[in-house]
Structures are given as C-alpha cells and as structure tokens.
Length: 149
Image 1 (tube, helix red, strand yellow):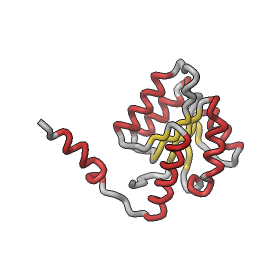
Image 2: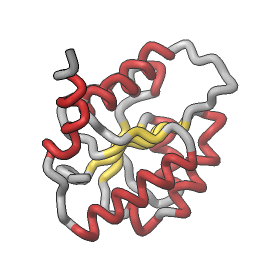
Image 3: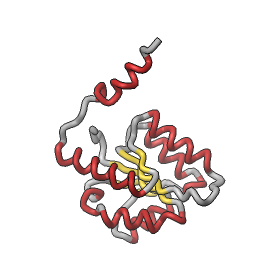
Image 4: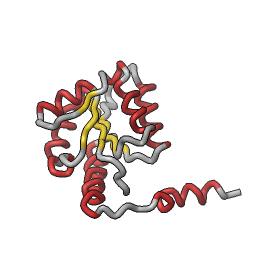
C-alpha cells in the first residue's frame, strides 16, 4: 500500500464514539504520524484525547460529504468510520457517497473495530517500509476481469 499523503479521516456515530476513542488510544504511535480530518463531534473527541484534527462540519450537515470530496481529490490515505448500525441515520445517502468514493478511489475503509485495527496495522507497516506497491499491481485483478468476454 502506498501512502501518498499523511491524511486520514476518522468518523464515529454517537453510539460508537467510545469505540473510536479506544481505537485511537490503542494505536497512538501508528496514528501520530498522520494528520487527521474528522466530523465535528468526532474531532472534539479526538482533541480531548490530545489528537489534533481538522474538522469539516457535523456529519449530517455535510461533514461526511466533505470527507468524501477529500477522498475523491486523492487527499486521504484511509477512512475509519465507526458506524452505529443499530440506529437509523437520516444522512444515510451521505454515508453511502463516502463509501462509494472510497471504493472508486481505492482508499482503505474500515467500518468496524476489527477492520480498523487491520488497516492501521497495514498503514503503519507501509509507513515503516516506505516500499510502495505499484498501482498496476493493486488493480491488476480488476483489469483482467474487464477483459472477460
């Protein structure tokens, strides 16, 4: 995984803020080399844990869309979105747009704690090794699939 930038996005629904805080606390060293962007509520919790984060608005008021735009612009190395799936969210289309941008632009997206642990471990390993994998190697499977008659 090539880390072309040092910006990661962290978002947590209200019911998942504690899980997000525990994740950040468990990965202080790995996360400390990155700049962070977050929605307002998540950014507040990050700052309380001594992690400065640039905030981009409340999630339902356009914060999720602003992060999706940063992903589309190639500014984000990974997105950690701790989703509370037990609660309906009126801004679900915004969340879907963010997920789609991560898929389209091949940006790692963690939606739960287990995946977040795996992604941050990979980011830390890539940062230590500084040996980027060529983009062609990451997309080779998709290119082959498009050639199937």
